[in-house]
Length: 154
Image (cartoon, rainbow, N blue to C red; front, side, top):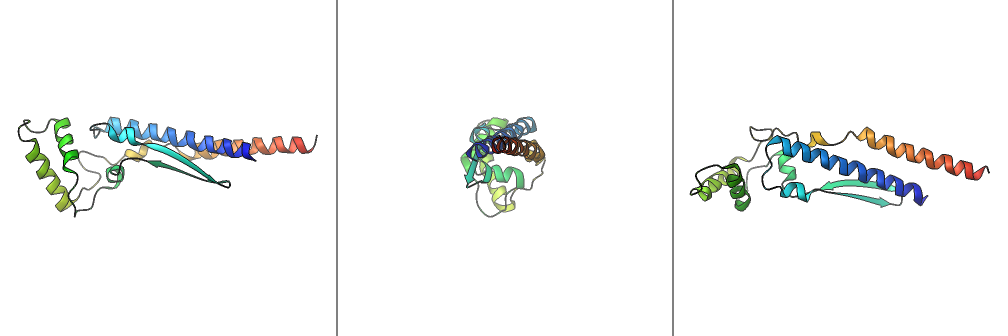
């Protein structure tokens, strides 16, 4: 049975990695890319708990905010806002700190709604169709079952 579990694990990992690549394509084409640290942070993880598989994609803390927005209430990291201001060429360079602080204060007071004029909220649209995963897993289960039946009836 370990053989089929290994195949299922590989199928899920392949699906998650393809989904990460799709998310990265969407991220790159959206214009919201800043330093590239988000793309470098995305990872996939597959866990097998006695044949019960779970898969997940992890990344920087702000991935959730890129997809769902941010509630008001706390000050966002000023250094990341400053890097965004610099990367986007906002201001004249001398007032980067002031602009970053003003943006951070606005985010603290109002939050961020997604979609907005900078982020269309489509980051998850790059995720692979889950039916592709189901097809691959079912194919491998069927192949394993046929092999086992052939071995039984030799």
